[in-house]
Length: 241
Image (cartoon, rainbow, N blue to C red; front, side):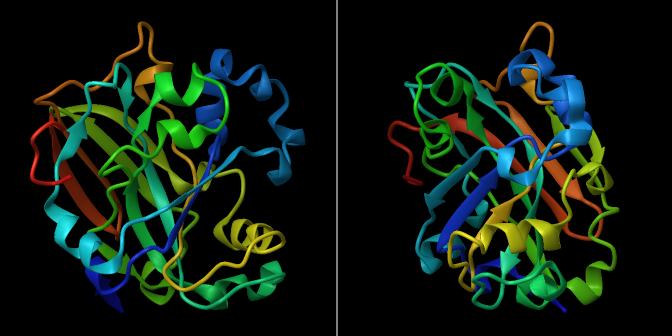
């Protein structure tokens, strides 16, 4: 079954860093050499960012909201990601049981302000929490409709130019493993959203780096999960804040 995203909203957003093997290799200078031995990477090594999301009705209203550009931004970046939406409370569950706790999968643009994320110390949440970040949807697609969530082509364009081309098959850890691991140290509740990492092609990893500006349009999608397209507009005075 495919559900409109506005029928369910995230109470909590959990974001995994460095989730795709090919992305880690492509941005090795930014990872401190993690890419040198991907075979030894364990899920416990992943950076995890946790933030609270908008109330349900606000999420529904904001589906058509643009990307807001704050005067405090200098390095606004894009990330197409597979989102996992929790459907049943999960605590200390096994990998074998994890799929029973997943409502479905969705498309997420895990927008990141790299200066706040990487250059100011402390938690990644500072670069992940600007208004209208993590635009999600258009739908939640249930596992029976998705089939193999570990083999979905994904892409992202900026102003019509292809920036990211990837596939969930390059995710280092599958959805069941991720959900089981997170449930070891937190309670996952219905509506919680897990962002699983991005393939190569983020602006920060380019030479020279490229970042979003006011007026840019970001379009992205994952096969079977739909597409979204949003334009970057000035935050100040916007009716979407």
